Every structure is written in structure tokens, then in C-alpha cells.
Length: 71
Image 1 (cartoon, rainbow, N blue to C red):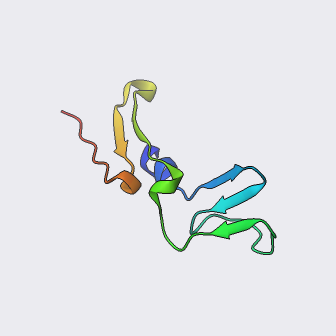
Image 2: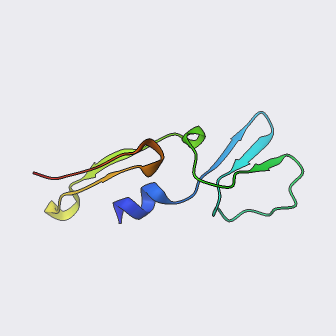
């Protein structure tokens, strides 16, 4: 679902450093990695609407206190 895609834990790579959000699958023995203990605004926020196959779905990212509603 759209909500599951938005809430899935994230990995961010920049300047040789790997940031791993809690729950993301990643080898924990990587030398240049930081493992976060919870969801964080560091990984950004996504709010989305889908109209796939004429079905409307909306989801807000809990990292940014997102809420979605269809009316």
C-alpha cells in the first residue's frame, strides 16, 4: 500500500557515510554507518496521493506528523 511504502525504514548515503533508519535491513558491521534507534525527520518526509486503477489512496508520513484524508 501507499502507506506501507511511505512508512518503510530508509537508508541514506552521502559523502561515504551510510545512515540507516531503525528497522531497515542493512549489514550492521559496515564501518561508515550510523544506525538510528527510531524514525527521524533526518530521513525527510513524504506525503502522497495515488489514483491507481481509479482507486484514490492518500498517506502522510509519520516522520512529519503527516495525516491524509480523502473527501
